[in-house]
Length: 512
Ligand code: NAD
Image (cartoon, rainbow, N blue to C red; front, side):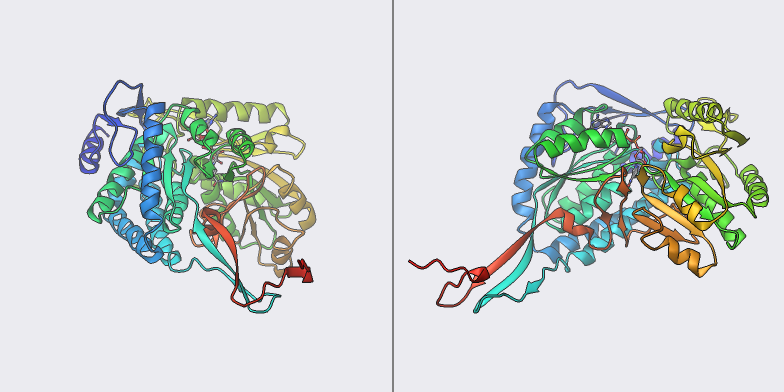
C-alpha cells in the first residue's frame, strides 16, 4: 500500500501534507489545523490535509463571485465543451483517481474506478445538456403578447458530500451546475478529503489550459464547520447536501431559515421483494450485489429482503451459501468483493445494531462479527450479517451503514408492499418477479413509495441518465440525469407586449 500511495500521489500532484483550500490557487500561508487521513484497508497513514479557516472560506467566496461573473456569460454549449474536456482528462486519469478512492474509502478497485467512470459519464451527459437548457413558449391570453420562460444561472452552488461516493456525487451536482452557468464550492467528507484534492488538482489544470475561470473551489474542514459556513451563507442560493438524515435535517433547517434552496440526498433503507415467481438466479445475484457491494455502504444498499413464504427456506439457504463464497479483504486484491468499513466507529455501529436486533427478537442467521485479515490487522473488516427480523423491531426502521441485511417472510404481494413501505426512508426499491401483475402493482400508486424503483435488478447501481433521489426522510430533489438540471437554474417567466396597447390579464380594466 505504501508503494501504491507514492505512485498515485506523485502522478496526481498530492504531497505528504496537502492544502485543503482552493480558490483558483491553493491556500498555503499561515498555520492551519491538520487532518490526517488513514486508509481503512490497513490503517496506513495516507497523507495530511491543512484544514480551511474562515478566512480561507471568505477568500473562496470572493473568488467564486468573480468567477461567476465571467462563467455565467460563457455561452452554454461552450461551457459544455469545457466540461467535456474535463471528462476526457478524468478518463485519462481514471486508474489513478480510482486508486485513491480505493485507498481512502476502502472500495474495491473496480468500484473505485467505477466512481471515476461515473464522473466521466456525467461530464459527457452534462455536455449534451448544455445545448438543451430549454424553456417553453406558452400562448398568451392577451393580443400581441409573447409568453415564455427562460432559465438563468443561479450563482454559487454549495455541494456538501458524503464519504461513500466521495467524488461521483459531487460531479452529479457540479458538472450539471457548471453547464447551467453556476460555480461551485465543494465541502467533501473529511474522511475522503484526499480524493477531493486529487480531483480538483486534475480539473484545475484543464481549466487553466482552456483559459477558463476556476469554477470549482474546495474547502476541507473537520466535522460540521465548513458545512455550517455554507448552510448559513446567503451568498449561496442553493445547497446540495448528501449524507445522513440527522445532518441533512440540520442543514435543511439552517438553509430554509434564510429561505435558501436545498437538494437533500439522505439515507436509504432499501428493500427488495423476492416473489415466488422470481427468476431465482437473478434474484439471488441482485440481492447479494445490493447488500454486499461497497461493504453495504451505499445509500442504495439493500438492507431488507422481503421473501415469499413458499421459497423462503430454500432462498435463505442459497443466500447463506452465496454469502460464504464472497471474499472479504484487501479491496485492491483481485477477487475480493467486500473491503473494509470506513472506520472504527462504523464497525462499532454495525456490531451494536446487530446486538440491538438480537435483543429486539431478531435471529442472526449469518456472520455479524468483526474479523481480522492477516497482514491487515489495523483495517476495519466485518463479516456480513443476515438477520431474520420482524417489522415490529425498531432497529429495522434505521439505516445501519454496513453489510447488514434483514430478511422477512410474506404471504401476499400486498403484505410485501406494506412491509416495504413501512420505513421512514424512501430512496431505492426492487421487486424480483416474472409476474406482470405483481410488477405493475409495484410500479403503481399502490406500490413502491421510493424515488427509485427497479424490476428484476438490484436496489443499488443506478445509471446517471435517470434523475437520482428519494422521498420521505431521504429528502427532496433530484440529481444527475433527466431534467435535474432545472434545480440549478432560476426559472423566469417572460411576458413581452409587442403591441401599441397595454391590455391587462384576466380582462381587468384600469382606465384613467
Ligand atoms: P454524514 O452525514 O456524516 O456526513 C455528510 C457530510 O456532512 C460530510 O461532508 C460531513 O463532513 C458533513 N457534516 C457532518 N456533520 C455536519 C454538520 N453538523 N453540519 C454540516 N455538515 C456536516 O454522512 P456520511 O457518513 O459521510 O455518509 C453516509 C450517509 O450518506 C448515509 O446515510 C448514506 O445513505 C448517505 N448518502 C446518501 C446518498 C443519496 O444520494 N441519497 C448518497 C450517498 C450517501
